[in-house]
Length: 157
Image (cartoon, rainbow, N blue to C red; front, side):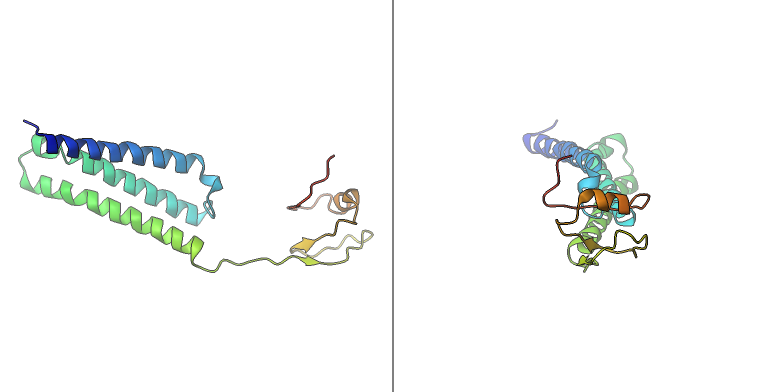
């Protein structure tokens, strides 16, 4: 017979599975909006989230393992597995957060340089172009080259 505390425990563990599933779904869906979430650091974050989610699933399943088996060893393994998954996942997420927020990430300082529109040579790097240079000239100059443009006041074309 299930008493009120056992029912509350099962419901809270089920709630943890539902909430962590929603959390995992939203993190995967909006992954590109997270800082440094693409590449190796992004993989670390996703593995951490998946391991935490698996830990919550195993924790919920632990409520039913004693009813399915009488093996003391199986019960001990299942009770330990959820903690292992959660701590491994939390460690990976913590590593991601440390790398993103505490470690000094390289910064690029743009420099304002006079660009000779007649020349076709431009060394790679960050450049700041003043607003008195016509946008059409810049686009012609950069034709066929890769670029990223960030502006405070975009022109209306």
